[in-house]
Length: 229
Image (tube, rainbow, N blue to C red):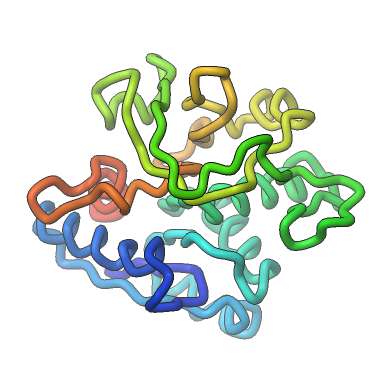
């Protein structure tokens, strides 16, 4: 059983290096017989069928991908086929983008960091950058994610400057990609897909707070879901 980490790995990029570390922590904690590979985004389109066959879960990694098209293909496949998926930081942003394009049918939905001149930026620049920030996240009590944290307020680390455009929050939430975690002002920080066994996006980077002694609960749960699927 294998996880496909979707992204263009750069060993000097802390959020990506700690993705490997966090996976190792949770694999050790759960005792899972599971491996993982980074999948370069430019290879996805031509290898899509093989990727679907060879990987039983996906992590949409932080960072701006070389091929957003490939990333969106994987997200859509996992969303529509109940394949476990987690997306963090840039992964959260691409989960939003895929949902807007293929569920809300906003074909011109774009990511403002990739296209600063986008006419329909579903992912837009945050009012205040969260790069290097630590902040409190408030979790809805009735959500799936709340059962993983076993609480309704947590402290997490951020490394991003873009998030869900407020103009699209209601449409995204009402269509089933539910906003289940926010900051104190109600701005989205976690989304989960209603009815899916494990489809979670976080604007923060949970892998930054994972340790061998205390692996992150979201990553533990992601791996456990893969094993049980």
